[in-house]
Image 1 (cartoon, helix red, strand yellow):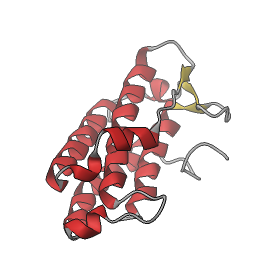
Image 2 (image 1 turned 90 degrees about the horizontal axis):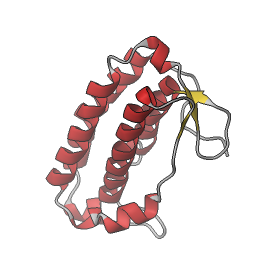
Image 3 (image 1 turned 120 degrees about the horizontal axis):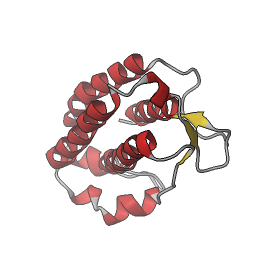
Image 4 (image 1 turned 90 degrees about the vertical axis):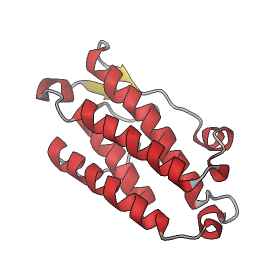
Length: 156
């Protein structure tokens, strides 16, 4: 399997504008569900709350990646994290929706602050994906993060 969610790389301003759109649309969409709908799980799948929790974990990990990749010597190597265990141990299923939304929005606002003024030469720094896929750039990693949000947005 090829690492990532993007098919055609977008310029940074376009990717970040999409992130701003998700910051507005995700809370509206999720507030439209009942608690039962938010916590319902199909076998072997995450609930809507757990998907949001997964996006929180993704935000935490990617904020660190987007920060570190700017100053560590290239190439930056992306470290995996255990997505399923992170969702379980953070107990997202049990937390109030408003807590999860505030946490997710705050993380993504910080991601915007960190990424929106990265110089072009820094955006082109090489990044090694965790699965042995070909080297990508920091710009690609940021765009892929936003595309990953889009992938899960469709599940809400």
